[in-house]
Length: 412
Image (cartoon, rainbow, N blue to C red):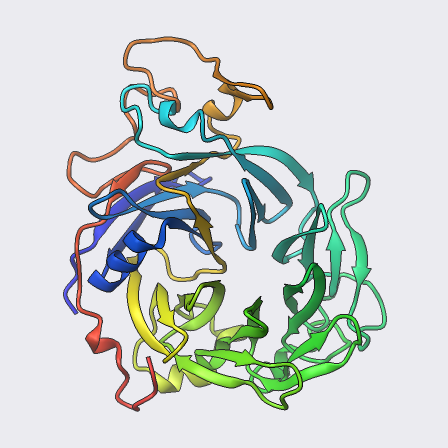
């Protein structure tokens, strides 16, 4: 599979250079172009939030630095992000986006600004959702669902019935939550265990889906399940350790396999008939070693794959070929083109002002000055497809994904 990818250079918090290489196949380009939106993703391994979008001729990727970003949630103009010690809520300021770059007006169509940050401490927060005006996290460290709080690190609202105490022991590796008709309804956990790290010996067959309201285990025998999502009357989830996208209808004893993909799966978003699925390689062998997916495919990918849920076929692939090996979450941003997201390290986050009636940039004027304080968009090498953390560059076309079909005959 030839590499036609671009290279994206950024800086992490220790100022060490990070090189991210990626490529998009023609199917992914076509899907994103027709989708009417963009894709947000997180990679805690690379410490980035990524934005994938279509500029009218090709795919573009923006990467922004955050400390261990995990769960993402999208509701209207708001975006919530769980990181190592914080949960931050962003809001889109579309009136300011076109002027983010004074020297290149109109480059961005959306601008996600940090609005509220909750200092949670290291809860190992995984999924995050908006629910009835509140931000709810899956508090993996304390094995519970919790709301973020202005008074506490968290306020627990539910724990699995098999967990007897709220203690920081990651007893069952609770990781995902699905909302159904405005109710917190289903969660995923790696085992039905009640001891510190007790899920680890059972990771291959201990995974469960639990009904929040009844406490009943509705699916069992799963292999490290993640990312439960309710869509069109059914529950969709990832059987991560087997590479399977599953769908389950309430009342059924088992879930159906939609397809199997060459990666450890985390990050799922349903868009009409299509599923956006995040694939990861397996770096760490102590926790993730010995999983079935490693025997099914000779090589695992780090990618976002578009799956047609009606037949299980792969419609497109955006692959990270270097620098990024694990994804956690994938979300679709409907109606958003060419988004920018700012962390609090960027001066522009303090120079943008919005109110219900108006929006303003209030920043020093200097000829050639950009929002990051430099005289150019980024600290970038002078070649197409290279950019620093936070800069936007197009991704060269394209590659042939046909060789992704495994010799074992498993579906992709």
